[in-house]
Image (cartoon, rainbow, N blue to C red; front, side, top):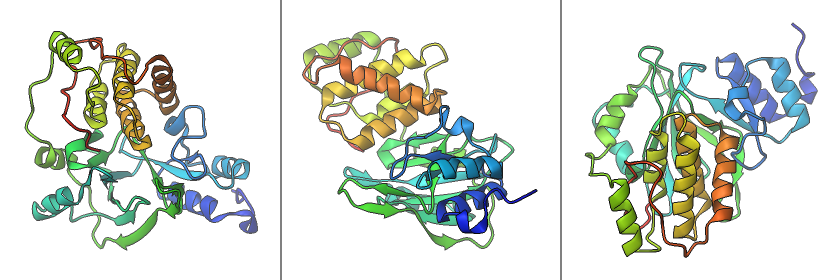
Length: 300
């Protein structure tokens, strides 16, 4: 097969994209300095075809690199250690290390926020699902998720432009058991509000702050046929909490992606909710029972 692009025409981003694809990871372009997909169906359009990758990066030479995760389509799973204004996931990282659950990473990537992506070979059996534990500030990216990869760059909250950077490489990579990580890090289940009690609580306390992570977890568990409506309701509640950080909206959108919605569909639903709700408006009852519990303050 002929090379998809002459060597001199390959930017560092295209060269990296081709290397990821050759290693078994489907790739797709994301907006320059951002995380949103540039293709119509987002990570569902990801490809390992060198010719397709060359066309994408000729079209957008500065596009960031999105990698699909999970054994259903890819060869990597990722344990994501987040850093947010409300906290970070390094305590969870230490706990996982002490439990001996994450010693087999293939490489570690430092994210622009100062967090870490621990990359593991995907576990084909059993297939692993994606999950998030917002209270511990960690995510596990497997089937149905994606991540930006080096040398992608994003604009941080401060306005600075920072890259994703490989900071370590493992010696004996092997799949990680995501379910054991979740079992270790997820807090014990708490009582969820019913539709009636949620409505009553909202009426008593208009303007209550809703936690983006818990809303995202709730949306991620909605069944097909109720996902868009549930996302719209959750986005309305988050809008009422205002002002909301960009990171909060990303967390909610990823919850919708985990539920099975594509990224563009999730973003459009969230934008529709933002247009339809005033921040001071009291919260209404959720569309179905099982709404996520509220917290007294926002933790991201």
